[in-house]
Length: 141
Figure 1 (cartoon, helix red, strand yellow):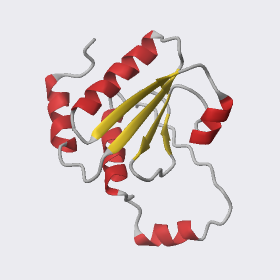
Figure 2 (tube, helix red, strand yellow):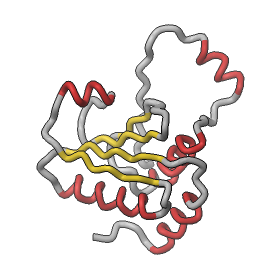
Figure 3 (cartoon, helix red, strand yellow):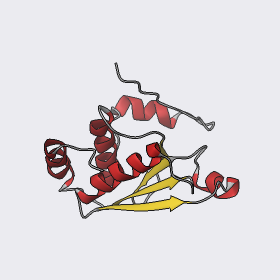
Figure 4 (tube, helix red, strand yellow):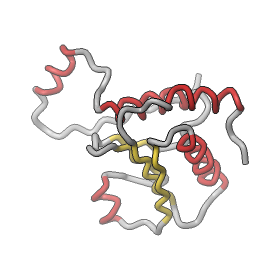
């Protein structure tokens, strides 16, 4: 199953070829595949092929609440993006269509160990002392 055009594959190769550090894409998916999870897996495989610094690991198991809690996911399917450090980035849903570009930006940020926050925002974030759960919901318009 091909989900990306040659133009999209070229975009991935050009954007991901020079990653600073390796990035692991840990894909937690149910042990019984659906059409949606198969498509998502295929897309992640295509993205991972774009760079030798991207490593996709498929974790297709039954739900294990203790394991999922330990890695910080609330449901499956879920994608954990991490380098040597885990920044707590969890992605739910397929990063396809308009989301590919955002997803690639997140991969680059994880690889570089940086965010796009301004210095003023970083100072404000450092002032937060209690745990905070943030979810960003994106819907195509």
